[in-house]
Image 1 (cartoon, rainbow, N blue to C red):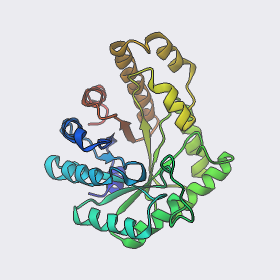
Image 2: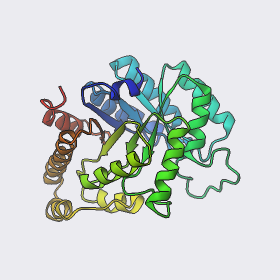
Image 3: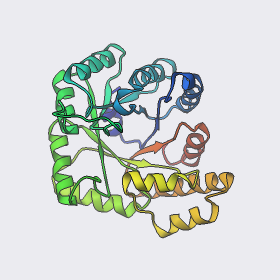
Image 4: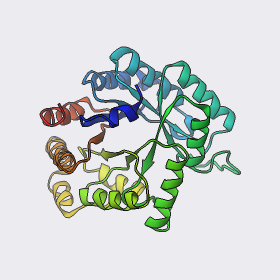
Length: 287
């Protein structure tokens, strides 16, 4: 099923992101966790793509398994900055043969120590156009409510986002955020700029205080005072932080749903317990 058809439905969507193992040795344990999450029957599940394509074979295998074994629509991530046109077309053909109809088109990060000169794909919009021209896929993209870390200002960021949508992107999934007002302000700006595709809100239930510094370093995410207080109080207590993190994420999602944001995407970190608890907390709101 095409994800754009899910997002255009009247019912709110709840989806989960999972990631493939970093090594072959971890494949079975990661696969077991992903299977548990897929058994919750979310609206769809996205599978991330390893840096430089290092675990891309796992991405395809996991996405295929999600669809065939659980009957859940899969969204395969695909990044391009360190890939050639031939490799991308090979991946597109593989995804098509495996029955994957949905792709999240990403530029991706250049792996540490690698130098990419004159890349075939410089931006995610370049990859989006390639996928569109290949045909047969529903194409999603990423957006950054607090601005892309490499953009000089929000105006430039939104202009680049518009290029991605014009190239064929049919829906956008946000980077994680912890203050819903950031998303609402972002939504106003992009709608004013003529970006009308569905927006899926990316929510990260933080269950480990140590995650926060890394999250902020990589994404530039702003932490509201209320969230900082939670981390300061329970960040070193795993059980308490898990409960508080799930509660905070649930509260965010309820507010989003109440304000008309019907697409919710949870960064599950391959944790079936977190996915299950979030779904249970929303059971009467997304039925």
